[in-house]
Amino acid sequence: MFRTGRNFIDGIAVDVERKRVRRINVRIAPDGVIHLSIPAWGCTIAEGETFLRANWKWAVAARARAMARRTAAKEPVTPEQNAALAALLAELHDAWCVRLGEANVTWKIRTMKTLWGSCHFRKRHVTYSRALARASRELVEYVVVHELTHLRAPNHGPAFYALMDARLPGWRTLRRLLNHKQ
Picture 1 (cartoon, rainbow, N blue to C red):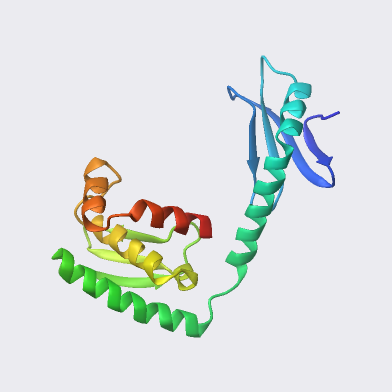
Picture 2: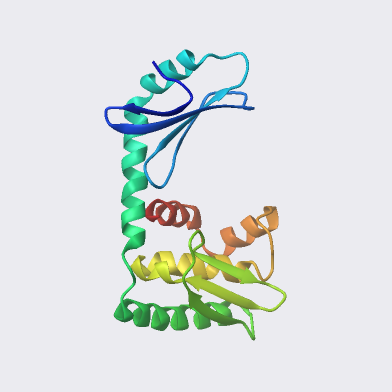
């Protein structure tokens, strides 16, 4: 029988809390703890436990994926990988700037926890994540095109998606692949 606070199922930690939510929510933390949020009213803790047990296979699989991503992210990028990424980015960034007619766009590589890249469109500066060193050339190219597209469409509105479709057909598949690498 669950209660609020820390519980265990098959040796896996499950944190249960009552919150102002409309539905029962199951989230997986990067450290592998499963968080179960139960509506503060209209639902019992027993109903939350029943829901989690009915979705237990999914929760364990999602937990395994989260733990694998965390382990992969902890492996530091070697100096050789960093140098190879810098060379690849120099090539792709310059080629796409010419192809898209963008001039005076500076870039750098840095460690980023949650982003593959970012664009400061007013300063015309792009930052790429060091984690791209583990990605394939086509995925790095997708990030380059994505960030350079932000120079014309600073947000992720319809104009941005129209430009991405015109510049890199099939980019949605690449985005899906890249985001599953995390």
